[in-house]
Amino acid sequence: LQAELELFGREASTRGLDLAAEPGPTTIGYTSYLQASLADGYPVALTVLYGAEKAYYDAWSAVRATASRTSEYWPFVDNWSSDAFAGWVAAVARLLDAAEPGGPTPTMAAAFDRVVRFELLFWTAVHDGETWS
Image 1 (cartoon, helix red, strand yellow):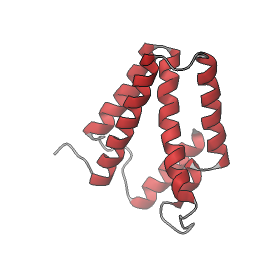
Image 2 (cartoon, one colour):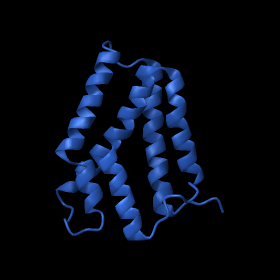
Image 3 (cartoon, helix red, strand yellow):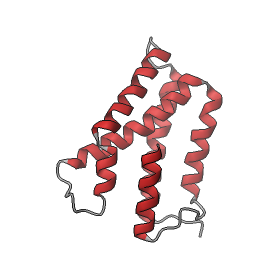
């Protein structure tokens, strides 16, 4: 997590972005959901974490083979498609399997689906430059 926070700091500075800026409505909704999922118990919260991390790994891994190491996005590609990140996602998957050996419950499946939808909304908001105005 520390390396990821440092990546955000470096890249925000490079791009002239203020990490203390007010988040947009989609970001607030998504982060609120992430935090609220803790109240649904460990297996659901772990499902939410897995869904978010797996989305990043799958998306950035899909572009790694064709991404240029000189691209302004390479630090993100490299971070979220690295062997270390793959290991993290696999470790979370093992925890999830141990937490619910019989497979996902309907509540866990709904939580995973919600994370996928939030990820799509979040990246659309980033792309569109969503603000409150």
